Length: 627
Image (cartoon, rainbow, N blue to C red; front, side, top):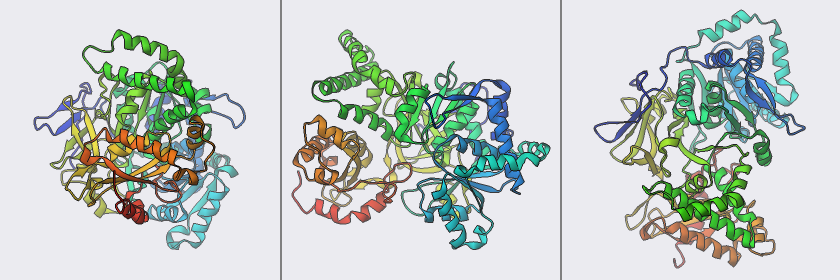
């Protein structure tokens, strides 16, 4: 594998290469072999020992209690000593299976302090998935959140197929005092031995194995080193100083910490000068947590931003809904005008001032009142929502990355944002387009390979070390990358038309009634779609349209619901050519969920599984006349 962009002190400016298919950004901060997670935490303590690093919210009350970097570091070392007392050796793997919480981050950094490798397991994982991860990664200890997860893992340990690996597996439970037990057990451990472990680590050492949820097949373990995470984290802080270098930096983590994007937020906060992180374990209380924590930036997947918009639209009725929709159109027009040489006109600015008081101030309040930037990752946000949020006074940055790139490998910057693109490469990162448009990546965040799977590693990497992402894209004139679809998801109709389904799916998912969309049409006469209803939004939408309550099953066949979806499909079709437009669709009686195996834990549709499961429904789409 060739080396990534070399360290340097030059500014992180986008570099365009002579072949026009490659873009790179030099390092903003020189990197060295000592950049590890223990080093990053120690550096944060050195820079700002008494400033808060974490804010914790007790189970009772609304007040967040700050915890200084020094206090957090001390507790990390206590738990790390507890790991050593259990006989865990440097390089041993421990697993964490829990909702996002303070203890997750504490265990993460404590394991790294002790030279261990952390293996996340989604709290939604099935017993079969968990067993595969525990055995494939040869996990020695798993810390689970509650009794239910403990029972599942104990059953795996007792009855699992690979008893040779599982026999030595130890299980600890957070709800049964795992942290207290670890701290107590570590009291007798010599701190000099702990220091030696932390000092012995280098950037090349393995930090974590993150199993990709995958849309098909068994998850693969992505091996990420300390250098991948920390060198990228340090450079990210310099790359987006408006967000991570501001006078006040506060991030509420509600994405799963088993997902690499959620994990990267905690690392970036530790690497920042004065960032503070909080944790929101239950998204049901997210609005309240945002209001009381008051983050300065929010990182989420597109579905979260869609939900916020759709909820605001569905909760409005009568004249209030007309005002909201006019405000949304005005915000989008205003944002688009910002990208023109002349900018927004006087009349548009006057309208925006009115709507800011009536509508947009309330949106910002939902996000906590102090948010200046939102960062969308994990999938395409769509230009409509991007323009809406920017017009409403919240700068939207869209990022792009994979588990294999330690999360971000590209992001739009506040000073040069172009909605609909994911900006240029991160510092120390190169992007290249293959002849067929596939996006290739290499750089400081690039994984070292798939765990115990050299065949998959060789398939993913080119001979000169570029990662084949499977995504298709194009560079804009200014060097920004635009994602146009997935290489394996391109649909070829019977008429030979190539269609990227993401554009239509993203647009249609923006309707309050719609939860998930699967665009189909491979070798078919036209494009069709399977649509599921959003059970949370349905009652709000019905109330705003003066319709008596319908349960989700009855709503599927209701002509008023069908008519609304037909209008939504027509609006989505406005973004594509006639040959690419949805000509037939059906509404499924249920939804795609993680539990039924149709969504990954990062809320991506498992296309292959869905296509197989709904083969009869897809056939039925083409057995009737199309629009």
